[in-house]
Length: 397
Image (cartoon, rainbow, N blue to C red; front, top):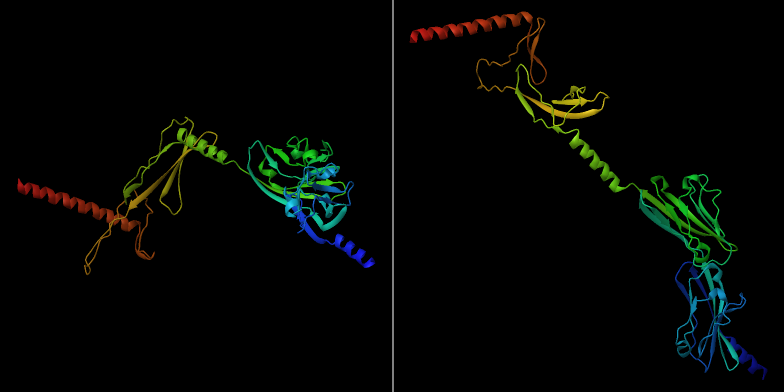
């Protein structure tokens, strides 16, 4: 007879144990409990004996019986509507938090007999959330997210930026802000919702974000008796694209209204001409005391006309490219000689002329006396041409 009693007791306490890990912040977690045989008029109960009262959820043929439910689970538990017909007694626990960690027992009672179907060791871990935000400078504000699903006790929320000293950006302690240690660059620019301790929403509103606000921000939520929750937010504040466009537009308008310069086309002249005119004109009226300067760029054929105000500001610039055409001489191979043309005027007395080839080797050098003889010979040649022309004219007459 004793053996029979022992057998019955073992039958009624037979159970399955399982372990379950989940991170805080997930939408829900499912605690499994199933049985193949469901007695008539049963009552199913989920309980956690570390709590007082221990009832987590209770179901009978009439429906849920939650009068004795522990209030920390209020509106957070549910079972399938047909669970007592199908034998699927699994429990859905919504918004699990760290304090939900513990051992949950699924039991069924019928005709005064209670049977344990399964136990679930639930471990809710702290999640470390990371966000990246981008905002343009000049925006009215930016919201840095930080949430916990449930506030179970005295709580402090601190936003920090550890590259600053002091690092505190904003602090909420119990029901009010504590800004004694706040970094002054955030003075009057931060705020949190007034009901943060009720909703678990510790998000930070940062007003008028600047480029120097770009950094890593850490939200630390400390609940008495629990592990701190951390949320990291990488904030990148960018310069306004429309601001850059605005300055470009203003600069363009200024150029059009005040610094409009008529482009001068490329100027070409023959080598040896006495002078060439480089043109620089403006379409707008320039002040009477404006100064003009011409400069050339070394090793190039570019000349720049610059107009300055009396204060030294540049009012306009214009560049001119000068091209000097080099004479081309063509001869047949084998001729006795060839003349390379070069004419100029008003040479000083100490002038020396050098002819050089493309490899910068001197081919011929003329001193001042040689130049005088060449000039006299040229004058005589010109006179002979004039005389022969007059003779020919008289012969015709």
